Image 1 (cartoon, rainbow, N blue to C red):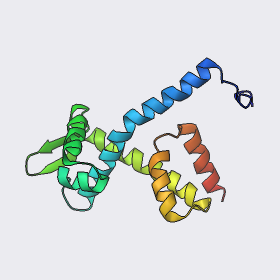
Image 2 (image 1 turned 90 degrees about the horizontal axis):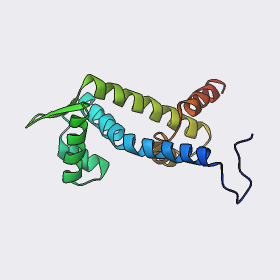
Image 3 (image 1 turned 90 degrees about the vertical axis):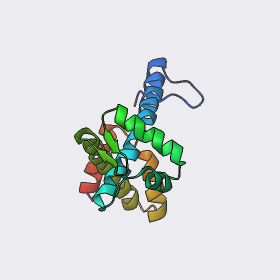
Image 4 (image 1 turned 30 degrees about the horizontal axis):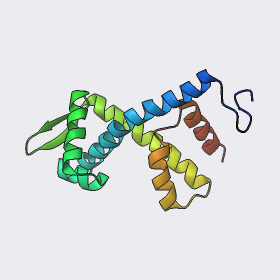
Length: 146
């Protein structure tokens, strides 16, 4: 394949740096995507997305949820109003839809491979943020061919 290093050998610097750079970018986007997707789910479910509910569902402290919502607001992805919860902007809703579609595709692939549903759900939550568009396209082609 040309990109593979021999066992125990280092990859070329630019290849290794590119890979680590992608991981850093994915980590930076991961938080925003998870919060946007959850806020969208809560609002779609007919409720409000309040920091307390967000914190409970993500398993984080209330303070952590409030800080993340503030970051969403700074990024122009959400708007919060006292006593009314958090709502996504158009850009935030688009981010949530994109994250949801990516999550669904990764989950469907894992299930098609025979991964138990509970494990597939947990694994998809992490994998979805670290998969390139080319890999996602390959997943979709694979699933269509089944």
